[in-house]
Length: 193
Image (cartoon, rainbow, N blue to C red; front, side):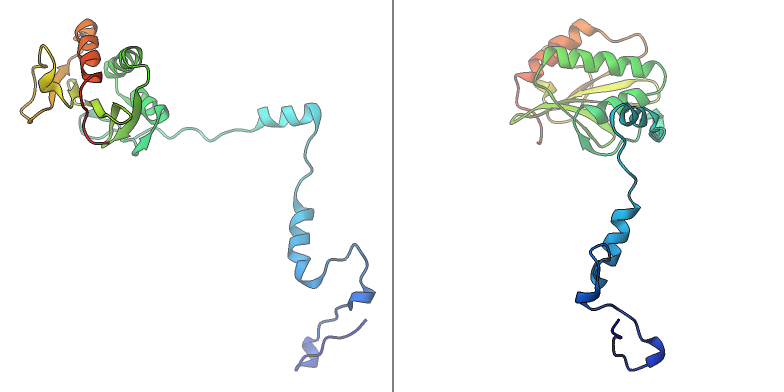
């Protein structure tokens, strides 16, 4: 074996030259890579592989923090999953209202786009913008139509230029009227994008 020349002979490293290496011995620069590749566990095959998958335990989901009024704190995200997480985290009877609203919206507007913005579920259409949203308060769920001024009859709440809303109290969701408003809102220009 050849010795690598160093300034301090006490720290000399013995490395074989290329002609003295065997095929199983990695090159000096590849030792870390070889150590990683040998440290990986063997892949299970057949029934063992299936059993391994079912034995894996996913971490318990973190329950969202409830903000003032019981409004769930859900991170800004697009898609159905964050909206469902919000609805599931709504406290008490409000969760049922959220599920019923979500179902009405999906039924009335099949190609609806969903997202969570400002800790509230938003519903809209591509190229049209957001058409409605809802938000949890202590005693009610506020359903906001972003172009609500154009709805007939106009939802009762609101002082904004175009937005109008309705406060849904426990047992007070009028699904027939809500569906009419949702269908009208889907035909109107929305807000933002």
